Image: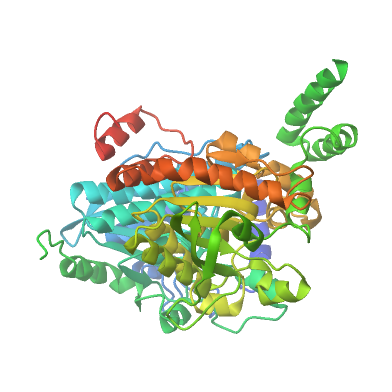
Length: 302
Length: 322
């Protein structure tokens, strides 16, 4: 990368988040050994967007990308998400080659997919596999908001369904981290039908008396909320995540007034009875292993 | 026929333009509409305006004509009722059935009472209650879809509209009685799908069904809410489009000039479609019914996969010979 590119890139950044004061010089690629397309966390910044506190890269990493000052949970990229849950080296991805086609020939969609692929280094907005969580076998899936806003098209619906069916087939509990703006409009009605597909797959899993644990991360909205995100046997959420069906802007334009502070956040959803528990990222792994232990499939039920 | 050739060429040009030159695409669409708009198939946007026509028949207009002795049942038994999503029991050619439908208003006052057919969580929970009742007593379920979408308001969010729809999708996908859905007007997003998972789905000739309203799509993807007519076309939301995509089973004709001009004949065509499909579904054994529904839901939509694992996947899930 030439010096001019660097300058250009750097000068562009403060405009994105003008509230944030920039003290650091951006991600140090050499030191952390990360390539551009493997960002550790989505907000490519070194200050907390909530309390504006400057956080050192290393401290942030040690703190699992949670602000030590105000407990703001940064959005996690796929790799960090999986390593925060799966025991080291146990995650085995399957059906990795599934990706979207352009079923209704929506203008510009193919290019967008290509861009998302390059930006995120993934084939699709969800990654599925099997792993051990504190020594317990589980099927684990994680959506990444970095890939077209985590939107659900046919490929995402298919992969989420296969994760659930893998659980049903191999007798495994299923854990899924949701992060999505909703259905992928560029695939038209077929993206809507993925809501039915994934919800049906959950029915098949739960009929086998196997549990589905879903963790809602920032943000989980639209068609994903109205399908698998709300169908967990236990529904967990990371603190401060936006969780809802209609997005805040849509509601504001319907009711023509501003929404109250904290509306549709994890804590709000827990209060309203739609989230079982809001769990900090640092306790997430042990919580999940506890849940797996307490949801042992009982084949013989009288 | 030079005119047909010209139209074909125009369509080809449009397809080429759609790849990168949106402005050209729009202009070509306008030309096409001017030259051929009056003839043959109506454009997607015209259909959207048609289904929003104030005189477009509502679900109750069809229910009165298609069924005998419709008796409305109210309430979700959790503390609410919803006038935008109605349900009840009736006879269809002597068979007891459960009917669930979005109900838009027939006039302004009624529209306000019905919240313009935008249902709240109470409506979806009532629908699920009635569906489970139907399951208990072996009644087939027939749903009429006609909504812009679920109501995007504070109260709906607080009561968990997402959860209500999600639960319906899951439960309807395993309901042990036949479910037939008919889109009679607007099929808008999750609000439509919330009562639209079943064994058969049909659409009236002029109805539309999409993942987001054309206005929503225009403002998000095209960054201009006024381009809703273009969005309507791009999203492939007409009955013919959906049939081509394999999302629905068939199209039910409307009377001459559209349903609002000829509700009697439209109702008759709906009745004929139901009379043809219901006996087929009723005669299926429950496991067969559920298996076919399952296969249809799980195979919805095309995607790319490197190895030919898909075949393998399906035989693993459903056993060989399915």
